[in-house]
Length: 316
Image 1 (cartoon, rainbow, N blue to C red):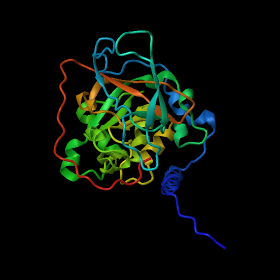
Image 2: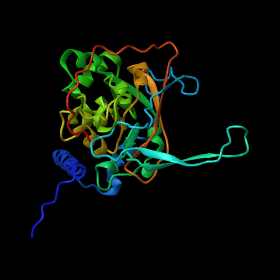
Image 3: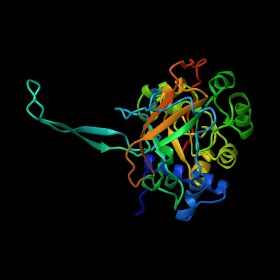
Image 4: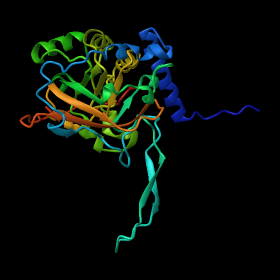
């Protein structure tokens, strides 16, 4: 007697993501890279480094430090299909009445490595790509370029990708995107991270813009950057079902910074720095802390207008 197996919705979402990633890799022209090649592009560009023009005004030792991390929280927004974040107190021997040497120890019981503020290493998509523990120290402090698209979202909606032409237009206004830098999109969506829970949070269900694949290639090939990212789930536009921005970033040997916090609006378009800090296990990604460094005289600009809320398609 044949039985019908009810499909597992979580497994279906994971299989759907696998198909999306495969499509993105197919569009990029490569799905498997030998280990030395996967990050060699960035490594070759890490030599003879100097402070980029316009970035010497901000000394990370004395600059204003801006928190850019969105930390794990109960009910943290989740990419559909990712495991939830759960924890409990394992031990608490502290005495509220006096200090007797007790201690508090928590245990994480469930956590995906690509939840809350985190980075993704090439191994996230690329067979043979580097894991976190194989990355150099180059990404721990990077000159920052912030591409503010809030007005464009308000005027035209969120369903667009930034092209190389858009980035060149940005350079004509603000200056050349620095080598060995990190290029982040500022959408204004980060405050949504603190609303709702899991895959139903408006942070997940609100469509967002991202980088076009050809724009990412231009950033790596013409500007020798190290990282892309956004104050959303990642550098991909919701409408880009093949995740070209992440795929191209990781194929180039770069990293993505995902779920960058609301403090990004305090950073200048050009001239500031960003630090990435945290543990680096032999994983494809992990939770990280992001810190921005800027001038004391700089003041944040407010987000412009409301953002449309629409069902979100696949991201990473």
